[in-house]
Length: 423
Image 1 (cartoon, one colour):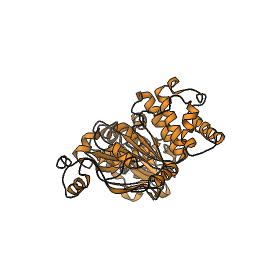
Image 2 (tube, rainbow, N blue to C red):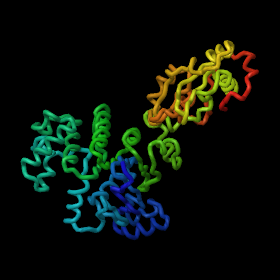
Image 3 (spheres, rainbow, N blue to C red):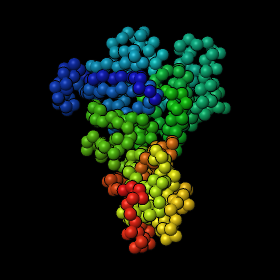
């Protein structure tokens, strides 16, 4: 994904009815959809957003929220009552039909909910149909179509007719047809909602794989919150024709813009949306690798923990030390931390989903360490913080003590603070 804008919508309105322009004027003055119902039906109200190249941008809302009307304005199937749309830098607002066809051929294709396949054409001919309309020779369009059919997992089905395919296969054909057109932007209107849950999940996963491989810009319409959270790099939430919030899945889940969004997301599977970076806390039970066992015990005593993370230069995580081992070294007058370093601790990347933290959290005596690609310690996810996040509770708990038993004896009270303890 880049910062280049693939699609831009500015102050879009779509009103159906007798007096659309007057309806827009009233809405711009603060009238509601209900206030203007006698003038016209406001399907989309003052929608503005940018979609970046290579982004999956999801528009989510309940039935009647305006999302399907909005997506049809992005390729000119519906004219905007007011506002503008640009695709790949080309305006599609108030342009001639011929120019609009040129923009569609070059820049934007669409996948529909109900497949829209030609029943008497084979899979390969359905996929190649758009290229045929564009004037490609038969040999070239079939070669391109076969390439895309293989890409979407329909190898061996190229010569079948639509009635011989399952629902999931039919949707793969629709997706392949859009991909064969090789446009930069792909619009998908409730594309997977007619599929069984298992097939739907497979299609979602394949779409992400295809987008990663091909770098397409995808605008995806759905009423399903979990689907939006799974697919979207960013999500626009619509209500009554208006976009009420745009943000990443984590933004919308953890910082809803209003009560409507908060209620909308309350039942989402948080474990498959939130990541380690979104719930991690500062690591406080930390000691430099140059510190000794007495310094480690001081940190553990002050923070009431039974272990401490050990870091080297630039906060690179070396491992951890445990209270029993440090105490044994103190009693033996040993000063070398490396001799008792536990290097087998659990670490995760910042983008690790919470669902993938549950098992290591249960089996680890330490909070889970979050590290970057250079193994630098970024933060920790204590077990109680993980449980709070999964239960939609306040996750600002502080690093949770992991005291297992009282083994720090009176010798620790004599530790001097000069050994480099980090509070």
